[in-house]
Length: 600
Ligand code: GCB
Image (cartoon, rainbow, N blue to C red; front, side, top):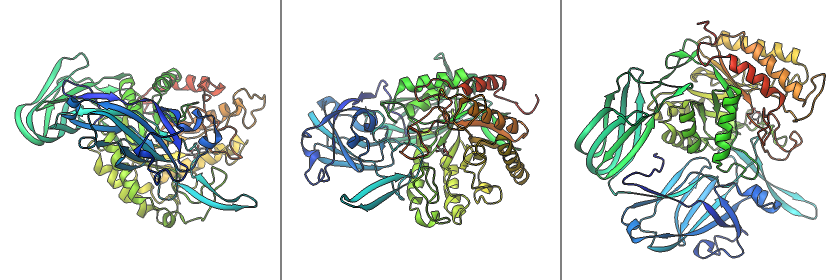
């Protein structure tokens, strides 16, 4: 799926700004709210989560539908083009209405979708209404539990328990755009590269036209020509060769641009020349053993919630560079397309994760769940939607050089009966969807050991989230260390050919809380715990990286394990460093991106 872009043939108009907003009173659809101006509406920024801006518990904790609305003008001339309305993401379910007519419904809160406006939009004023539902249950990703309970005096109360440890922010979270293209247009582009400069491309078009393809380097010089002026219908495949290619690497994220002209349409797709491969227990970038240094992150900040915020994104990338990191995981959902483009440009490697979190009926991280052990794969009704989000994420992100691995889930019940049957087809799907054949992983929690995991045989990299010294052996780093080392030994004995990446390890830490003896929640304990993990990682050659949990403190649902959110950040929610940030900086600045453990 192509990102909307201005070119000689394309126009993009932003619909971001202040929209009207209203909670559904339960009758919004029956009363046909999309047909007229919302009465008693309040202002709501787009893009943004609605929860924190409203300063109103009724809105923050609302369960179910809300309505957004705005009008916009269209000219006669615009109607002559192919006109699309595109949402970067609406969390979690959206119904889009134009002038009262339902245009489309979309499920899944973290990926873009678009709908054609021709035939529905009219010259002049148009009324756009977006209804948004934030409910999560055993059919959604992420998964949750909708529970109705009865209370004395109050009666029935419905609560929606997220089966995941981040606040269930909702709304129109990413940019909304209208874009226009010619009627015969470029629909999709896929690019694959090799280290010798060979570039293969597949172009999908709608209609018929003259095709012209060429590549420019970062200074705009044309360095390779592909097809030159043939008439093609519906698409084209080809190969071209760039002499003396400059490779994309974290220290030099060099980008080329493939320009495609098809009839009157022009689209420019950036790409980097790099390869990714897993071989002999190593993760290879451009054929060299790479060491991941970084974090699991969240799209999370005060006021915006999970809403797109380019200042926050650029600031976070700069903090990653300050601390010596070279990578992050998009825990626990695909991040904005704008963030992916930034990582391409800034040389940050990304593990791209679908929103498959909460696939564990026995999971208790929110302190409120708990369920049937071994019941996950009979209770969850997510398999079909899981396929959708995998193929949509890969279709969206396949050309990004920054993306080096796909994560098909975070901490599912991979030790339970039925896990292999559930996941094997999904891992195969991810492999089939990706023209670049990146490695595929499933991030596994402590309950899935080398002995119990039912998915480790068919994933490429063992991604482990471990909390020895926090959720177990709390306060006893000596015990935590032997447990961690023992488990790592067992993983490496069973899977000597698979690299191991630590995708989570950490401790809740209250910024400003200090102690001479490193006690739980103190800045000193966080620092000591990370140092202990690092010593153990350094004893194992197939540990190919460390991504601490979390980059910054973040909001979660209310529960007794969380004090105004999860405090495992190395930075506070306002991005101030805790003590551990300085020791991480020292360590990571001394670890090279390549050949850390090969002694070269
Ligand atoms: C995990 C989850 C992550 C939580 C973290 C924690 O294993 O993957 O979403 O936030 O633990 O801090 O408990």
